[in-house]
Length: 192
Image (cartoon, rainbow, N blue to C red; front, side, top):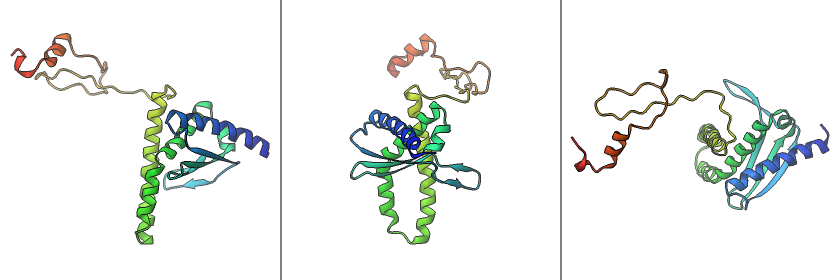
């Protein structure tokens, strides 16, 4: 891939990232973009994947550098490009915790640092994924690839258990009008 093509893909993705920064009130941060063809491949016990983008953020000075693997971004559809931009911005938003964690690690012996760093990396990615999913849904950009199960809520007055989400017809419904009005009264005024 030629440098001109890398720059075009990278600049377009940086614009996506800046839009997410603005949505999350991080518009005052300075963002540097670094465009490369690929970053690296990572492996763990279960999976092997290629890194699409990575961010280094300096929370104290409110600046971040995002390295974008343009060959990988180019392969993604528009939804996944948007999702990746949101994901990287969540890393920027939570970078203050990373700074604190790094300071705390300095006080530990090297062997313990490795263990805690692996633990932190896993928790950080899980939290970032959770927040990314929530933000994508809140902004109307989330595509659910599975059907949600919603538990039906009943007004519990000794009528038994609520149905499980896997039972047919289990959808969230408002309580009957009489039950709603009884709950809105103070306990001493409820009819017995």
